[in-house]
Image (cartoon, rainbow, N blue to C red; front, side, top):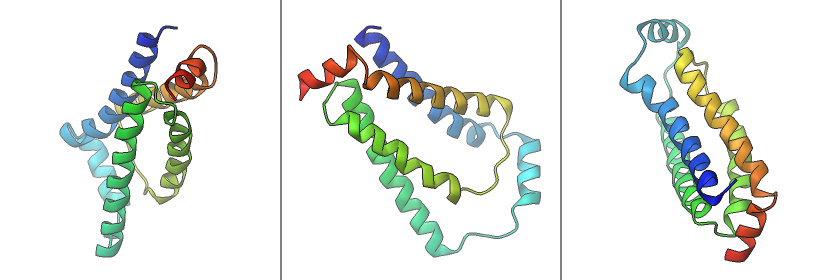
Length: 135
């Protein structure tokens, strides 16, 4: 796999992850909205809203920095990528029930598959060497 292929894999991961978040907001499914309205009973208090917003902003900034560093083969991008994966694990426990369309689930899964491939490639040759040369 070439550097270009690796960079395209990173971009595919980013694009599919972003689309899995944007599509339900831009083109909401009537069925999923109705089901979510039936399931969601409580509103988020203001403190929790600000904490969630701060976490989203913090994670988004780190995600942008990490993605750019990966694309440029910066040596500290490898450990940052692993840290970002571990930081995202608690988010699953904070999220509420969500109902998604098959397209959104496909895009999310594709982003996760790409993330796994990136993680494996980061620590195997020749990409391991590319990151060592930059550091």
